[in-house]
Amino acid sequence: MADSNITKRALAASLRELMLEAPFEKIQVAHICDRCGMSRKSFYYHFKDKYDLVNWIFDTGFRSLAMEFSGEIPADDRWELIEKACEYFYEDREFYRKALQVKGQNSFSDHLRKYCFTLMKRRVASLIGDEAADDFTVDFFTDAIVCAMERWLLDKTCMPPDQFVSRIKRIIQGGAAVIYQEINQR
Image 1 (cartoon, rainbow, N blue to C red):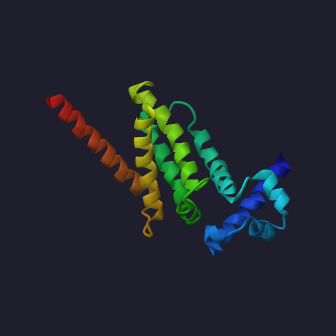
Image 2: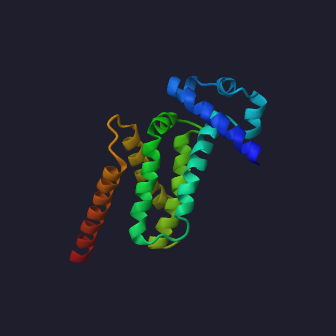
Image 3: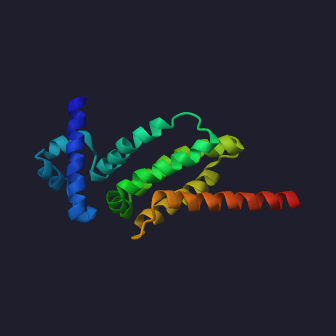
């Protein structure tokens, strides 16, 4: 297993370097392999394609953050988790900016959305119940989060994560307060 991770990390480092030099669409598996001195056979033993490699980079990088906050998260810590997630993306924003610009089948954007959908489904179910957490509802909230994060990361003047989370928090909590007041006035 250790050799497998060494190979995967070498391929990931190669792709990261190439993404600093060229658009993702122009990078071929052969370029990735040449950069780190591996064969295409080695690449395809570990990954389906270059999109799979990008998704692996996210999965392995994000896993340690997710493990830190596994299980039920107290309300006060949820915003901390969101801020840590945003810090993760912000610290590696050049890579993720390029990864998010790629659209279509197997894209990182789709992978991120699926990942967030799973998290959001659990969160919505815990708030309003399993039956009310249907795909339409979860899709709505997932799209809002992923779209906001993509827009934030792709902005050339990408604000620091603490400012981004503070603004999102203000919008969500302010909106919830207004909705609560409107419901209670009826």
